[in-house]
Every structure is written in C-alpha cells, then in structure tokens.
Length: 291
Image 1 (cartoon, rainbow, N blue to C red):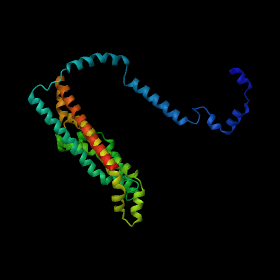
Image 2: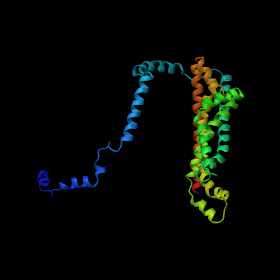
Image 3: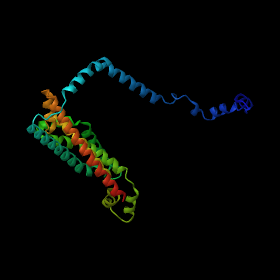
Image 4: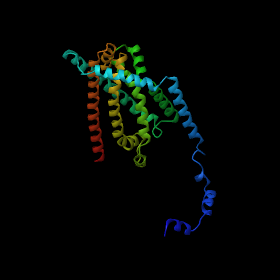
C-alpha cells in the first residue's frame, strides 16, 4: 500500500488538536509570548553591544590594519633572550619574589576568611545582622580591583613587594569570604543533626559535622587562587608593587622586545609548573577523601 493510501485510510482526529489547544493553551503559545522579560533583556543587551561598538570606535578595518603591526612586533620579539647571565639571574630572583607575594597574600587572606566565612554563612552565623554586615564587607573588598588596591597600598606603605602582598590580601579576602560562606551553606546538614542529637554544642557540630566536608573544597579553592595570584602578582608589579612585573614594565617602555618575550616565557613556565603541582595536590586530596 502506498503512503498516500495509508494517509487516506488513516483515522481522522481533526478535533483532537483543537481539544488539546483548548485544554493546554500555554503549551501552544508562540515562544515570544509570556517571555517578555527575557526578550526585553536580550534586546537591551544587543542594543548596548551595538552602542558600545559604535561609541568605542571599533571597526573591522582597524583590526585588519593592526594585524600587520602585531606580526611585525612578534617577529621583533624573536628569539627570546635574557640579554646576559646577570640579567637572567635578576629575572629569576624577581620571579621568586613574585611567587612569595602570591603565596603570602593568598595564605593571609585564606586564614582570615576561614572564620569570617562562618559568620557570613546562613547556617552558622550568629544572627542575620552579622551575616548581612559580613557579606557586604566581602562585596566591598571584592568590588575593588587588585590594581586599585595596589595603588592604594603603595601610597600607604611605599613601593615594593609588601604593597603587593597587601593588595592580594585585600582582594582575596573578599573572594575567599564569599566562596567559603557558600561552601559552608552547601554542606550536608545531616552530620550536624547527628552531632546535635548526641548533645553536642554548636562548636562541636561545626568541628565534626561541617569541617570534614569543607576542608578538601576549601583547600582546592586556595590552591587555585594561588595559581591565579601568581599571574596577578606579575601584573601589579607594573605599578610598583614589586616582583617580575616591574622588570616587564621597564622592558616594554624601552622596547627591549626580545628580553620581554623571555620574561613572558618565564612567567608562563612558572604558572604552568604551579598548575601542574596544584593539580597533583588536589587529586591527592580527592583520593585520600575517597578512601
């Protein structure tokens, strides 16, 4: 039997679509109906994007014209060279200083954010006012960019790596406070109920019910922040906060492009090594936790 014959002999159910439309009208509405808020947001985003391209004088022609200059600059950066062994030693020393800035800033922020995270978490805070104040403080610290913090502390304590450590500390304190409080709120409440049911205090419920769940997560977040702060410490050195960034800024200003490319490769190699070791530590923690 042909397809046309089967279609002609099939039972007619012309009334069913109409009945379904009448019974479930919301499922047969066009997509844009009932989605006015989403459509409005998308339209505003497109309008802002178009206005930004127009007002910032972004054009395809300027990008194409700049590709030639970019290629010429890349050729002038080759081959990467430290210039001399003495300069290579100073680069390594500055890179070690950058690592020290990142490590100290990250650890200081993590140590202080750990108890403050309990005050900002909904399930462990003292009261709603304390939670509100703690979260607003974290928002304020996190809302100021690390370069601005670096400029502030340079004017307070002077040029050098100490200002870089304080800038990373202030920026990471807000980020860690938010991440730690959210991790505390997401912890399973059943172990806490078990500790409380046996007569345990609030501190005991936190120590034995929440901390065992949190430590692997918090340590993983701190390791990732240390990796990220190594890059950030390289940037804040450009404004005078110590580290490899100060050398990189000077090389860019004097157009020492081959030495600049060597320093960039040194930063990339250091960040890659940190990423490798931090990943091994995270996997080791997860493996121990699984056992």
